[in-house]
Length: 133
Image 1: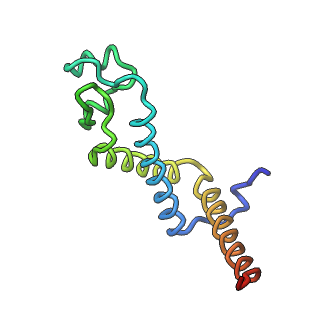
Image 2: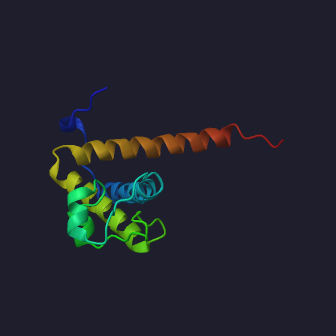
Image 3: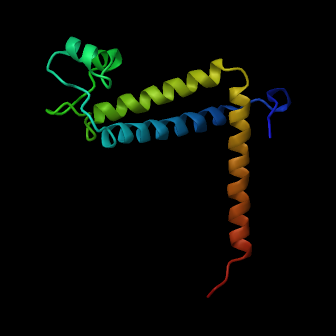
């Protein structure tokens, strides 16, 4: 099924709030995935410029925003600073995409409306089929 953004209604403000909330959850999941499934350490030395040259997991954003690592060079899972960075970046990128990509906000609003309608239908189905043991 292909959605034509021209036929969809405009996105309301609450659609943007829900979309940014979903992006925040995805940012938190990304934070956990980066910390847990990282086999090799991001930092290989104590010098940031050397790490930029020889490490795949360490980049300019990590250096500028002061991402926290443990003594062995692995990304800190229990760092609130790292969690805040991951969530804020995901929310920012998701919001910018909704604003700048043509039709993205309309398609996003469509899927949010379909999800809410599905949850409401599921709720009423459960109410109708409920049995007292």
